[in-house]
Length: 527
Image 1: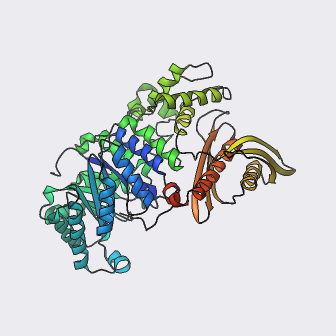
Image 2 (image 1 turned 180 degrees about the horizontal axis):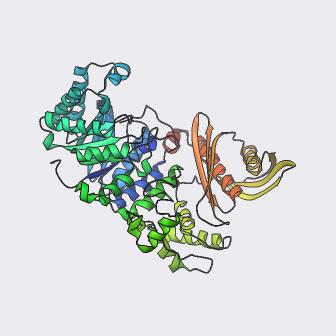
Image 3 (image 1 turned 90 degrees about the vertical axis):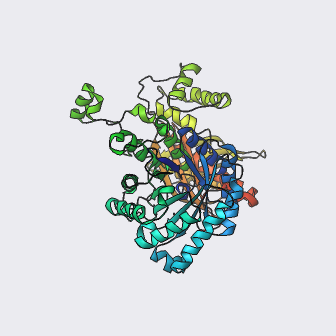
């Protein structure tokens, strides 16, 4: 396909590279929920995972391939027969499928990681592409760490894989090392010196170690790339990947400069961003471009004055363009099903009748505790439909006492689905610490708390607080989250969720890797 086409494909790797970000691993059901949201968003390619990494990854890729229609479903593989065959089997039920093979090319990787000579790299890359072409016609190749590879060697590898049958060639800045002018020259060099390059689609995959992933990706587009590999909220290894919402809105907002389009439904950006944030437990920074809480906020008097005159004085995008509602209609306990359904729809969520009924019940309970419910409250109700570990422990009673003169005390009652009811009372350095200790004592599961985050999901003094806890147990990391107007209750429910995940893993030892975040059988790729 000619690189001069006016369409830029959006290759989303949230489920593969994004999931590799510490603490961002997802279960199969969570991956499916994100994949469906990405399909509704209108991305062109979903890289669903690395099938050879673990049985859980294989089954997640296979589930996405079977159940998600629309985008091309892609699986990552190293240039060896086992990886490629496993990827092909995982993708076999996809309506449209792609195998993405990769091999490092830089001198650093050749010497210290692969211990391979240049000739071996070229031969292995060609073999990998040819093996992938045995299974499907859509094959992508990535020379890992291309931005730190000698120009002539990158060109040699790219020419060889094109001749072998690659249909997309991705040029990754694997460690976020390059800068825009240098990266643009790499693409121009390849277009000048590689035979057959006009017949493939050039792709770009940038990391954000120096904060230039979006800039480098857009520069590559100017230099001829027609596919951008990116993730929702820019999550990914180390400092993250190129942010999907930022490159998409840059291309749309500056279409007069780029002369290019994407097929993304931009009004879905904000809901998908919040969904991924909720599932991964990675909060969206307030000052995050496009989808951050401050992205369309104006506090300066001069700015507010200009905005009152015309929005374009200080806004280059409209909040509605990215799916962010500016409605001032506040819901409360007297609001009915119709009003709530309309608000859920306005926020970009689509629920079936069963899901909506659950949200409506939670809405009524919350409305009895809060005077006013804002968009953030509604989003929290919808987003907690998925992702929480079901049982076996549920909270029946919680009472905490805190005094600045004595240790805090927590008393709780837990119900187990086998019929047990356990009550425990413990003291601690504060009500949350005491409650956590009480849960550990009651369940008999001891964990190491690594991180505890708490933030407001909406405005007002009675705002809901979202608690996210990260713990370690048995050499694995676990994450739990919960939302409540009572921050202690929110923290306790989040902690109880990780306890449930741990007990679930113990009861299903053969499937523990599949369901638990942060576990891989082999090293993940850093394409």
